[in-house]
Structure formats: structure tokens, C-alpha cells
Length: 157
Image 1: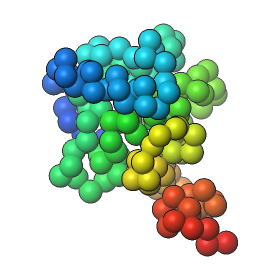
Image 2: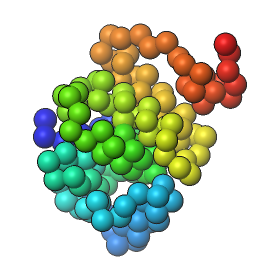
Image 3: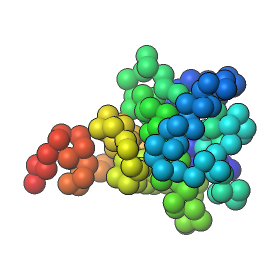
Image 4: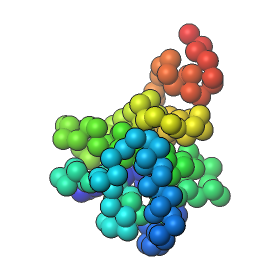
């Protein structure tokens, strides 16, 4: 796998983003204090970070599938952009294989924890996505204080 991505059953990546959607996404990028120069719209096969090029391709699958119940499908565009920028890009060149559950877990967890200006719901879906990545790999995750505070609103120590 050459790219890292949020994946999920979201809007089709084959749909071209409109000028209005690109402007909206640029506002979302600004909201999370990401460097807009890293993002390329309507390029690549899907929304994903490309290590070798240090760019994030943004396709229509940045938008959610609101008919789904899976957290990965429900993440807002801002959460997906944070997953790519604060999750994958900040860990560029690390030893985890691209696309591995650990790489994807870390991307969603770090985005939930460190991306600015995410809603509570954005953080919740990112944490739930991280947990789902582990679960899909057959790994049980023990929730830490941050995860409990996001998911339950308090620390259950």
C-alpha cells in the first residue's frame, strides 16, 4: 500500500470535488491549523497521506456516509483531515507499515488528542475509529484517561 488513509464506506472517491466543496475544505484545513500547501484536491485515488511526497490527497471520500453506523464512516471532513495531517503526517517515516492497524490506530488517536478545533463528536469518532482499528485486528485496547474523557465525558479511574 503506497498511501495512508481514513478508508471507510464514505462518499465515493470517484466523485470530483466542486469548487464550493474545495473552499469549504480549505476552511476546515485552516480551522485545524494545518498547512494548506500540503493538500491536493481531486488528485490521487482517495483521501490519503503519501509519505514519499509529503502530501495529502483529498477526494470526495473526505465526506461522511451518514447512513452508516460505523465511526469511520461518520467522521466529519474536519476529523478526516485531522486524521491525515495530525495522525499520519506528524508520524512521517516511522517504522509502522503504512496501512497497518497500528498506523491507523495511531493516526486516529493522535488526531483526536492533538488536533485543534475539533468538536466533541469529531474527537469521539476518532477515538472510536482507533478502537475499531484494533478490534478489526483482534486486539483489545484498554481505554486510557483521555479516551474515557472523550467517550464518557469523565475519567472513570
